Length: 100
Image 1 (cartoon, rainbow, N blue to C red):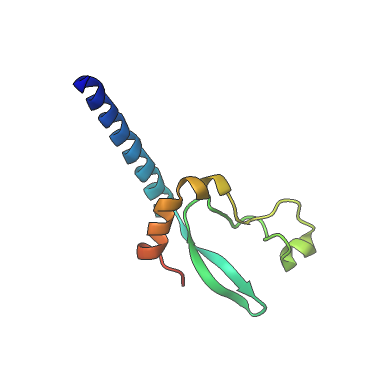
Image 2: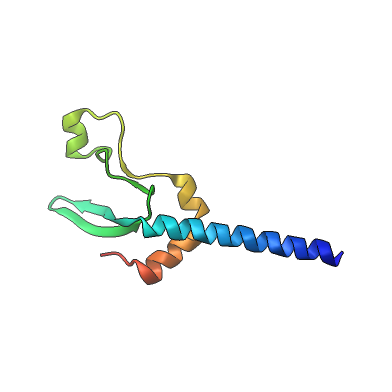
């Protein structure tokens, strides 16, 4: 029984380290991206770990999207990653990468 508990502990530790490591890598490759845009331009920049934001395509409803008749929109995306990594993302934007 003790051996089974030790194996479970090791597995949980490995999964936790993998979870944190993946987010740290995504955040390391991230950058600040526009999160609030007004009539006079960007009002707030928020931290976006890699693949959280698609800057290669215009925002849905933006002037660029309307002009180009875009069928693929960018901006904040990947809701699955948002939900999966939200605890780490919250800590990241609260203490390390605050809004600008």
